[in-house]
Amino acid sequence: MEAHKGDRLLTHGRTVGQHDRVAEIVEVLGDRGTPPYRVRFGDGHEHLLAPGPDTVVQHTGCTAGRDADIT
Image 1: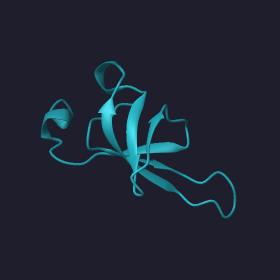
Image 2 (image 1 turned 90 degrees about the vertical axis):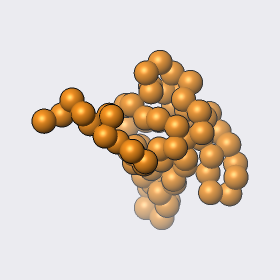
Image 3 (image 1 turned 45 degrees about the vertical axis):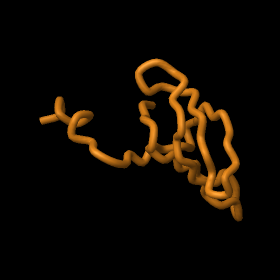
């Protein structure tokens, strides 16, 4: 998993009735965009997060530099 400051992490609910959670990455603590990440949830709560397989990255902002190698 690779993410950058400003990207969002979407963690899917694991059980019936559990809602998905969205958090914005405010700091990348791993090398080259890897976990762990310091994230901020919508209520302002910040947390240190090492995402599991139920989490996906939603890239935001300019991605031209990141996708330049893909043709």
